[in-house]
Image (cartoon, rainbow, N blue to C red; front, top):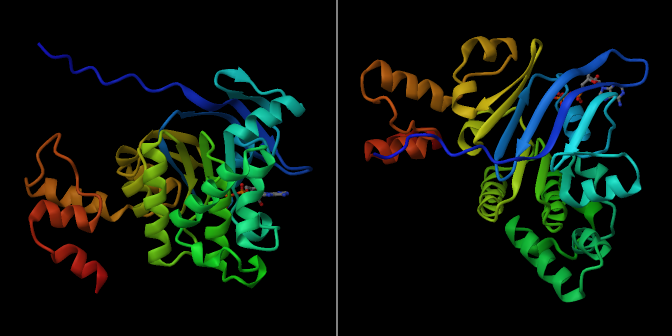
Length: 293
Ligand SMILES: Nc1ncnc2c1ncn2[C@@H]1O[C@H](COP(=O)(O)OP(=O)(O)OP(=O)(O)O)[C@@H](O)[C@H]1O
């Protein structure tokens, strides 16, 4: 007889335990937050404006220090001293929301190579990483361009390439697709898929519920009643949670619900999460043609 026990959840790489944080003289932005990011997972962080997503990402990457509770890396508490923070920052890379807060070198190529060079890697390895990162984001042609002359979407892709070139174990991104055109978004998702195949853990804050359902394994929703975590399809089908967090129901969840209502999706069958999934499922090109029209 075969066992139906699900595989054990991988161990957390980074974890907040009962974490709280307030900005100076401000009310608590986060309190009593328990949040573990398991190795190799793709996690979407969702929540309304001001719910604390950026703050949470900064706590996980060491840019902000927990006011209460603790941050663990591989199960050990991070000491906010030089050694502890260096270890954290070589494991976890944060791509901030605004690329202008991240880019600083004269050209895209120099910016992307800065991190790997700082790690003391041999020149050949730095060149390889830079080329791979630029190719992954489809910005090879921008390598010699001054960063300040790029468009917002180009700067955003350059900032993401810089973090990827570090080959962190955990890549954290704050709204990485905001401002990217459809091609840029697809290239980013392709690059994230490759990172995932290489075992990288990725956490992304986003307002795009369709993207979250399509891309993530797990979701973390910052709602007024607290942080809820779980499988992405389950959380994004919870109407009460969506309403509380002021999130829209994803397209795929609505379609799956309709198919179920009409007896077309049997229990345990994989739900279509994108128009392309639905096309594959129905054997027509209708859904993606309609979406694209
Ligand atoms: N540097 C700061 N000083 C004081 N308060 C801040 C600071 N940064 C953020 N806040 C406050 O902390 C709260 C959470 O902000 P945060 O940026 O983490 O939210 P968010 O969920 O990322 O929002 P958004 O979806 O708009 O990006 C907000 O009320 C915000 O006004």
